[in-house]
Length: 445
Ligand code: MN
Image 1 (cartoon, rainbow, N blue to C red):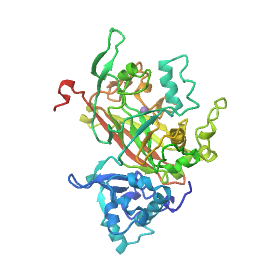
Image 2: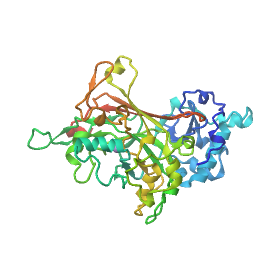
Image 3: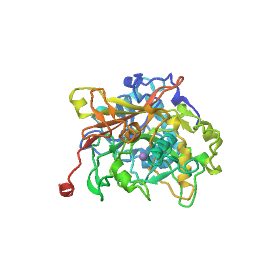
Image 4: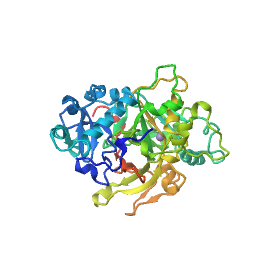
């Protein structure tokens, strides 16, 4: 993907807070989200800029946006914009960059019109950015797959298909929630080793998974494939994803058909979709496979994707326990990893998904799988960090965790920074763990 004026790190915005070196949302980012400006207002599209949101419905109303994207920007979800495709996304981004740039929009009547469309981010209620039709979760970190496999099958951690097939499963979209939504500890069946039969009750081994997720753009008609060389243009952008996981339920249920109730009770995403175009300065080569690993099959191989299909994106997990919040202590970082350690690129995941003729649709969400790197402090879930609870974590305040406790808040963060590029971030993906409900009262509350 070519760099253009929207990526120029020297450019500033006339929205002062966008020029703060620590902001996730400088002029070079321009991520899209859906928000309510107040509790009773209707949802509308917005673009984050510093500590403000540019209201796209308002901007469309006063004729500031390119014709090709105006109708899509008046919707209450991003699906229509996602369906337009890369040329329209690029035209809209170029125009937004122009309208919000200090150099391209000097003080005057035009800037005043744009300024009238700004609203404070802090007062907005963020919603899910799209109507997510289908949600698929992959397993694209070989380090995660190897760690988990070692716990389950010490003799053969990686199954024979791993280096050939981007492994995934169909998740559930109904329970995807936006950052800030509290998540209730699930109930379910577990089979304690010392009992003859399974029991039903609150999950005891609740975990998070640090993931990146891609929103599908135009998609593909049923019965067609998406060549890996074109797959990148079929991805609108990315968000952070916490794939909450009930490990004890998972252990009992996962054979033979894979994850089910251990995963589908809740998945949390960050509200701001950072476009692949914004991430262009942070592309890097695909993961370098060890010399004795097989090359991917031809339908998953593309020279350009191998050269720049990776993403140099730092991803972190932070934890704030109830005791930490009560004491006014800042969250503690548990993990720092990087998306460039993933065995499969986003384009390979999408191309594989469509390779059998499965139609993908605008707003479908593709989770990467837990992002774990080779180092211990880059493991993206507690299952790996505590090695299934056998090596508990001791937090700075003395609290100990094997898995999540009620009242724990998990915060995912992501950002990209490189010499010669403006640092930008994905914002945050937060979720607070609530106690399980007793099932007898859960239906008629
Ligand atoms: Mn997952």
